Image (cartoon, rainbow, N blue to C red; front, side, top):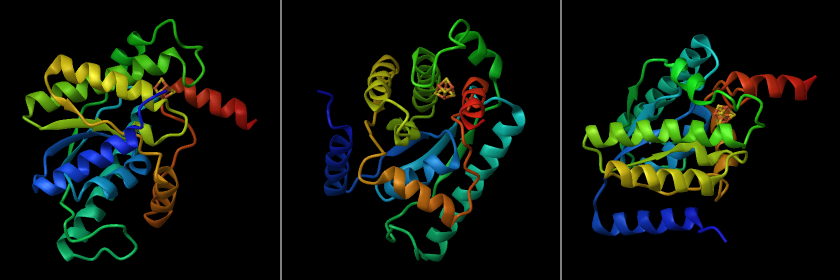
Length: 223
Ligand code: SF4
């Protein structure tokens, strides 16, 4: 049986709150909808920098649109902290402002890495390669930037295997000497809350994961 990653994170948060420490967290994010709940949940306990590194995304246009939505959401959250107005949010004045670190769009490396896995269904081996690529880069940036820990929003998706993501995160974290924060953000109604927040902030919510392969799969399913 897999560990209960959601419970492990809760315990870690409790420990941090008792110690009064708010670590610097580099949070890999795939898009604004997935990060909406994660930022709402974690911003009271960590000083968050969102790390936008997603070479898997199918086109520069899509990449930039998701990035602009991510920035718009962070600005809205930061305004709440400035004005201390948390109406409609599960947040308190303990919430911290959030920063963002964006990477250039880099699809060639992704396409090279998943060569031969183009026909895998979502959730298969191609996704494992894609997860590792993004987590590895996040771990490296967290180490270089002197962060205390790193994690990803990806476990919020019901289509993504949290155990696999946590295993990769632990492994690359150990390799780079940076603590990985385990999670299963879909739990505790996290996925449901991300849908509510997406509606509240009128976020662009794409109907496919990100790569061209997942886009084609979604188009086939919808026709
Ligand atoms: S379906 Fe999503 S996780 Fe899987 S390879 Fe494509 S973008 Fe990456």
